[in-house]
Amino acid sequence: MRVLGLMSGTSMDGVDAAVLETDGEAILGFGPTGFRAYSGEERAVLRAGLGLWPEAEGLGAIEALVRGTHAALVAGFDAVDLVGFHGQTLAHDPGGRGTHQIGRGDLLAKEIGRRVVWDFRAADVASGGEGAPLVPFFHFACARWIGAAAPVAFLNLGGVGNVTWVDPRVATPETPGALVAFDTGPGNALIDDFLARRLGEAFDADGAVAARGKVAEVVLADLSAHPYIARTPPKSLDRNDFHEYLDRVADLSTEDGAATLAALTAACVAAAARHFPEPATRWLVCGGGRRNRTIMAMLATLTNAPVEPVERVGLDGDMLEAQAFAYLAARVAHGLATSAPGTTGARLPVSGGRISAPG
Image 1 (tube, one colour):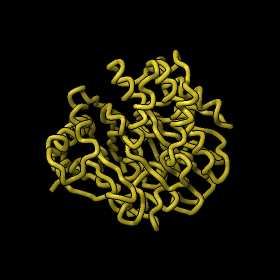
Image 2 (cartoon, one colour):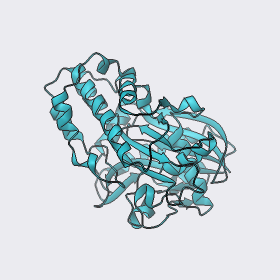
Image 3 (cartoon, helix red, strand yellow):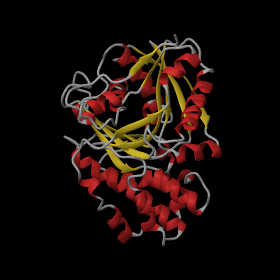
């Protein structure tokens, strides 16, 4: 199948789109990609919806924005058999209310005239899973595609950090022992929000602000004591679960605050490795955080394996999650599992997602 995957992540910078050729098991080819940035006004609308659940008022404008921006991006692609539409996560409360991704895939299917797979997470939550992370099944396919012969770790540093430990020697992603995956802790969200307050900047380009600062070790030790860090997987986070920590760096200079938050991201990743069945032979990093040289340098000192951007093995670190939802859409269309006990804590392997046709 030739599938178009769409992703708007917790960083809320815009919509990624990527075509993947796949039978739902192997990666058979990579197609064109695209990106549609959110304007400042659009980002403000999305931020206003963070923490809201489906019964809240005022969601209509947010849903229309999410669906409209995605539809506009889809218009630039042709010869696509299927579309995988993640929507925008507004709230995530594993073990509580569940998870909420806004974006009506049934309406998007009518608007773009193509079959759409959407609502990927609800079935996993209904099966006792956290509903996240879902990208690990694609990471398994990526490990096979790059020819990995020993365990590797895929680290995504978006708004929230998440890691997938992959053993490519295991037969399928749902086979016990193939995958261990979970959210590590803050990715870029705290740094982004901190710099938005201090400088009006959306993010720390290249980690330059943090590079000029000094880590406040006492504050870092306090931040690193969050009970989530020591919790055994499966586990997942909402974008704002660590948001109160911005108050802990409020008295630091802008540079020292950025450096301390960058160190927190790296420390959370290092702590995550304790949950791996055996050490990863290399760390492959995707998401915007791989461009933060300060975080990448910190990771290199905290892990016992090479830490490299995924481009080093021929993958696209900006589009990996969009490609992942193309891959998951193909798996849903073929009735294959998209999550398993080792990735989300679901009781059994689950094939999540709804398929909506244009008619």
